[in-house]
Structures are given as structure tokens and as C-alpha cells.
Length: 193
Image (cartoon, rainbow, N blue to C red; front, side, top):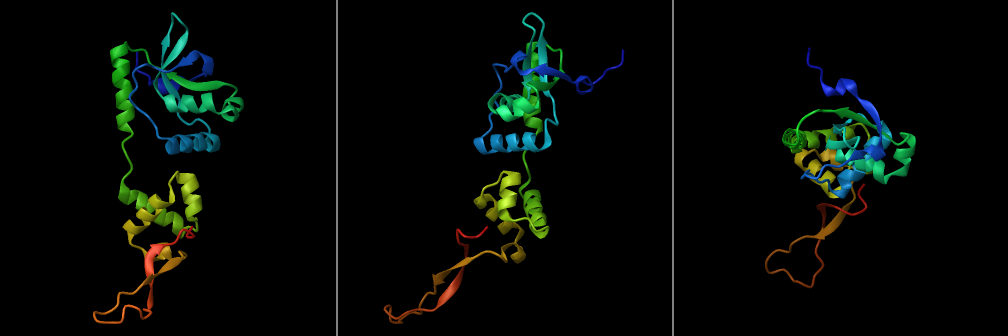
């Protein structure tokens, strides 16, 4: 018999039959979980939940995809749209191998390169996307966008930023009570988008 990857046998399983495992060490921060919800809301489920089918209880125990499961569990709009069914691919492995699979899935996702993310922010800015748009669609806060813009060093990324005024240091011996000239600060004000 030829091996066939589980993804070729995705099935629709009622969410009530899907259960989390008891050993997953992965957690997702609230902003990333909200981004996952936005992703599922906009794009639908594009990846199945990986499960083991427990034949005794007729339940599907999650190996990978707990947070995708959680989105449906916590968001009635997603649950209704999907008819309460989750896309599931089934693996048939003993518990130790399932635990290893969970960790491999978690660790294989890696992390985003700061340089590549900076380039993406720059490209989106050049395409006319505002910081607000980038924040919403990439799940970034303003500070993160600002830091990524600073990494690229492109003045064009800040051309629409409002800059506050800062004091100019006085020369030694100058009268401290005399007004000093003003210069533009390099820090965008809160009004920058």
C-alpha cells in the first residue's frame, strides 16, 4: 500500500466531537488569537485541524490546531457560517507519537524574520496602505510598525508623519531664560497613522 498524507482525507467533523489534548504547551497571545479570528473570518479555514480519532469515545483529539478550534468555539459567527463543522485530517498514532507531532507542528512554524517583516511593511506602505490598514490586517500595533519602519531606514515611510517640536540645546554661557529656537523631533506624535 502506498502512503497517503492525511491532508488528502480531510473530513467535516461536528465541533462537539472535537476535544483538546491535555499536553499542548503552545499558547497564543490575545492579539495573535484575534488575528487568527480575522484570518478565518476573511479567508475561511484553509488548514485542517489535525486529530487522532478515539474510536472508544468517537471523539477527535486535537494534535495540532487547537487555536483554530478555539476560534470556532468562541465565535458564533464562525460557527454558524461553518455549520458547526471543523475540517479535520486524522492521524493514527500512539500517544507518544502524537505528543511529538504536536511539538513538531508548533516548532515548525518558526518565527518571522524582522528584516523580511520590515520589507513587507515598506512594500505595503509603497502600495498606499496606511499604518491603520497594516495594523488591522497584519495584527501589529503602532509601535511595532514604527520599529519596522525604522529598521528599513526609508524616509519615505515617514513622509506623512506629524512631527512634534523639541527644544534646541543652548550654547554654553547663553542666558537660560532666553527663548531658544525649535527643531523638529525625530519622534512622530500620536497623531501619526
